[in-house]
Length: 310
Image (cartoon, rainbow, N blue to C red):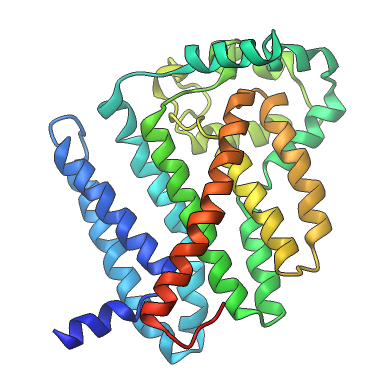
């Protein structure tokens, strides 16, 4: 029993989050086994993820390359969780709440923000914001690399946990409030490149985003197939977290994160990916992530590593 307890206490808070979320997804798959077509693949992947988390937590204690792998494996893991949700949300819920989100935006602003922003659209601005939007998944990686280069391992450990924990919370939001966004509901998705042209990279970057959301070029009825990942705005939540952590940790790139992050959050509405209420929810999720994450991190460190004071 003591050896089993010691095995679990070897986990850091990021490992713990990965394992708990994998178990959570597995339970949901089992409960809705009759609706989720690929439940067996999801369960298999979750078992592999849990095993990997335990294995890397043990190997990382030896230092060297394993210490690095213990952090970098989180990058593909976030995408794995994201795609698992793709096979779960619509079969389980079978509904989208875009009509409710649209009504909230109209109540706040008296109009549709994406429609109003179209009045200032121009190719140069669209190109800039589409490029900035495309930096989203790189921001946590850049921050992590900066922490490693500065030898700030405690900060990296805490930051990795906050980022992974934040992503899992946003994924739960997708389960609770499925939605597809204004580019499908308030605008004609198929004519987006014509209405909102860029200069050189916009069409390519849009295609990358679309493919990541399971609607590559030529997809029939993309609104029916696209990932239900609008509420809350994970782009807002996670970008704000990176911006705050970069300042908290004294990142040498904090001004880049602040400027790029501000433009990125604006781009989510300008480029028609989100309603403004999604951004408000993303900001609220960010505050909850920081508040609850700080307490979880402190509690687990006191349990598993009483000497830690971060």
